[in-house]
Image (cartoon, rainbow, N blue to C red; front, side):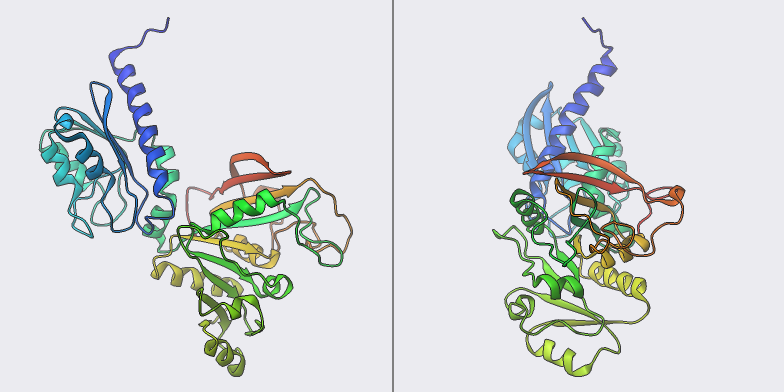
Length: 385
């Protein structure tokens, strides 16, 4: 039989209840952005007496919901919360006031809030009232949960998810350019679910012309993402599904400053929003991300093609990857996979030492495919482009 000290038992309990709070927080995914996903659990004598999560932007925060459920049972208990309680008035009153008034004797927090009005201020307020505060329980898991919110606050740019589907030999199309469908029906369903929780979907003009996609979530998700086409010379056909649906579902066409005026005007008249950017391809991409950040977009999905993905990786703008690998071989020197045989174009890396590292978070079956999800590793720390 294992023997634990009092401190180790407390730490084990803290981890169990914080994992539950993280699990609750995930229920707000796609509903709370640009706010962070937050979960809270209240215990008394190691028994849960209240739970809550932030369920909608502008709605009640996790702590106040959990405290409301716990009522008087919270007095003398412990509050577990994934993010530092707010101490400023926004769309809701400060949560820290409700926490203090509840009579809890201890607060366990996973991570500090990077919002400028916060940054540990609530924790100091709690300590001043005599509440015992523990910070950093399950920090790594909570940081991953908060990563899109943290990036938006720190860089004013959205979290960028790069998604692609390829054959086992790294091809994204056949020698004739056929690419529908490399991935399985189950994989495509996962992509539609992903679309339904993010703020925007980005593709290049090549993909728009070749595939004529609609880029909507089917069935409809909790969010309606803005469709964004990188189209330097305003070549997007007015008969495309994207343009024909522009008045029902937002569509942004990103063009160079010198794009043909007549083409731009035609797209605008059909309901497209036109964004003009100058500079090289990388500078235009970064300009787009900055504008998305100004609009408080938290998550952006990039669906290709290889040239767009390559520019984003070259510019260090990708944060997360979803790679669907189909159990098929296409082969052929002329397959559309760039000369190196990969699904990501761009300049690439000359040395393996400089290759972009991906921390794999999961690898699982998706229908007949393999879906590998990961987070891009930044050299010398978690810097974002």
